Amino acid sequence: MKDEIVQQTLFNYDSSNTEYFKGHLENLQKQLRQFGFTLNLSKVYIYLGKYGPKTAFDIVKALKIPRTETYNLLKLLMNKGVVYSTMQHPMRFAAIPLEKAIWDLVTAEKLRVDSLEKNGENLVTLWRRIPDFLNEEVPDRDDKFQILKGANQIRARVSEIIRASKEIQILGSEKSVIGFYQSDSFSSMDGHGKTMRILVSNMTFMNDMIKELKRLRIKKMPSDVHENLCFVIGGDDLLFYIRNETENPLRVVAFWSNSKLLASSMRMLFDSLWSKS
Image (tube, rainbow, N blue to C red; front, side):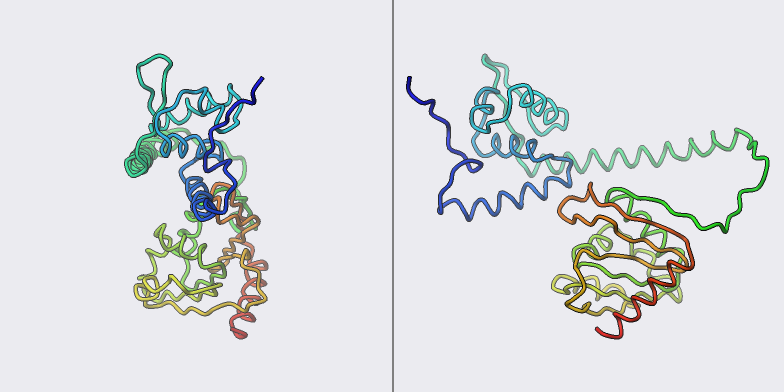
């Protein structure tokens, strides 16, 4: 019995001629994570996009993904609207061009956020119609802490800290700081009397941010500071990255607290590093 011929793809073809494309392929898969693509979801989508319409069996054979998982992946991709099936037998699956797929995903996310914002006002109204049954007042000045998961949740808290503070200190990688900037976390920096100091690993792509934010002072952090270290201080608020996976925003985890002691301690660390930079 002859060995089964397996289609060579970018995912399984070992050759020096494909190393250049493999680098781009890995980078593309990392970027697709921001849109909710797991490793195998991106594999199937890229395979269909680069090799044309295929049957489920073709995908199983080429990518070595179990049959049941392949059908689940195709269903998820179709639900996302980035893959469609053809009406023929056997059924073939094809990828929506990436430009249109990204546009559709971003548009859908914007509509979801708009809907959440509108529904949020109704939720607040309903909440206020239900009376409070507290037996005693909750002390507002007790130290609090919270674990935040995912880049979006963390950036939203950074925006709150900057909005409520006059002096802000940020230490982090260039990618983390640019992420804050691009998510409009710095949009309230035009406020009267606000100042911001940033220690960053590199300043290669930060020209636009530096030009826009007039009250910004920025330095390159000492080379012996680990790039994954990232924290934000504003007033009594401290946000500290516990797990900083810049390549996978969904897996980022941060710790927030309003403890004066913690914020003061981290501010002393920041001032010490600032003086050495």
